Image (cartoon, rainbow, N blue to C red; front, side):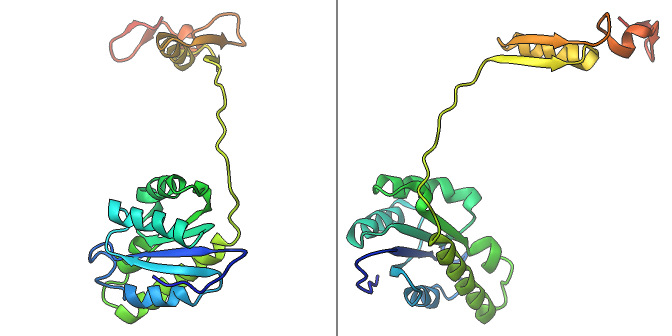
Length: 202
């Protein structure tokens, strides 16, 4: 862990994950962490074996308080898998969850460059630098709760429209079915029998 003593303005913490050997087997994560310490506005950089695990998350929380971080960059695996994890983590430390940015070192780097230690490490540094640059522009966001009216409008009274209206009604929704013709049934209402059973179409 390292601090450069910044007192005001942006205070970014970078957390580089080994992900066991998923990342560290291809990327020099120690070198990436040292590189992160040199970036503008970065006041601490931490390398962790598994950042998503409780000890790794606790280290993020500790660093937020110790270094008064107002932005966090996690360089680990896919945001699809762990963005909610890290958003919740920084929120528990008192930081707005939308002041966290991720760099995907696993899917975007180590997994696609398994035989290029030097190149993968250089690319990881670029990904971290990009995430830090983006973090500088993050703004706190608040999630809104919007009431939902439990009603549905189905346009078209053909077979598909009637089935949709019936299914929605069975789920407890109030349904309004709109049909431009004088009767419902669509094309099926114009047929006598249907193939292959030759049953009545209505």
